[in-house]
Length: 238
Image (cartoon, rainbow, N blue to C red; front, side, top):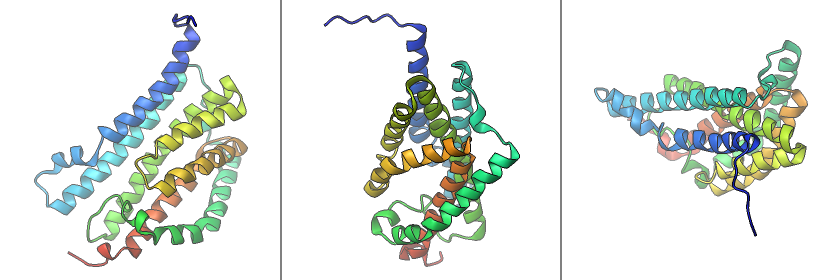
């Protein structure tokens, strides 16, 4: 079988989106790590050094994923309508996110009690978990997941649907989303096969990514703190 290896403009565009998005995630995961940022705070005590390194890492990852995804979307001519802050759609989306979150609370509580989840969460394994640490962690999660959703439910999903159709676009985004969770607990990775399409539907039905951003952040922050609450490792004070 003979292949035509000539790169056309459309080929370069597709490679830019798929491989560019993949590269962004790899850089965020492997390079912008808390360990690397902890070196900035060498003069601080271990707990403070870890907390500050983690916060700076999480914020930086979110900013990188978000801004770089917007840049790629702009370069390939993709509309940024998924970032719209129009009041009525925004209120509708946030309302839906809160409603779904309430329905999921019992599942989150059940999940957070599992050793498999507690071995991974909270990501920042610092004792004691005082109010400042919890608030900073929540802020970091929100910024990170905003950038994360701009990549997955923004750039990847929207580009896929525009160019390959609805279900192919959803499938490509979901496949990459699942692979992005291979370092997480197995139950969470398998769940992404359902969560990926569900988040796609929520994004498309509300017209923007904001419902998913709010829902994803609420789930992550709740899971983080419940896992710490139920884990004996975090019940003592240093």
